[in-house]
Length: 210
Image (cartoon, rainbow, N blue to C red; front, side):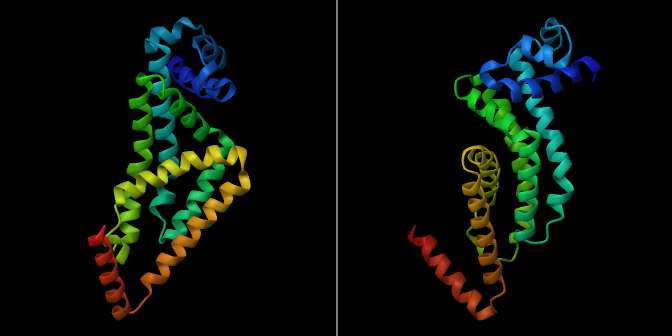
């Protein structure tokens, strides 16, 4: 990739953080990148196409940054500990707020919807195999919609970032509640075989009733 294109991608991230989705333009992006705004259209065709490219590239970089730590989690509590660290670091860097801004823009601009959803899918694809591995052998694995759960985790990541901006204690309380859920799952997994069979039977009955 040329130096100018990379500067435009980086400048887009900066412009979104500074001005929000409503204030971003070829001019604000070019100013942040330190280039002539005509280069936005020369290299990417439109501001929307540049936003989409920056979203994909920025998210892919952050997913790669956290990949080893996510894959190294040995329990749900460890996974949530990584999630807490991820949440704090990405909050400070402004990366999740960038994605949240694009999500807001996608509500009224369908050209942003697909690339923004694709960026979220990068997180889902990283989280899903970790959840499958950690839930393997658990009674919850028989009823859990793991792809749906991975999407819920990714959506919560963005949602908690927004929540954090207006109610930080509430966001921390939400993370603590997830920790409690992980502890509950670990307790269930430590039950003896008879108790696990009884629990599995109750869960299966409940699922059939639904």
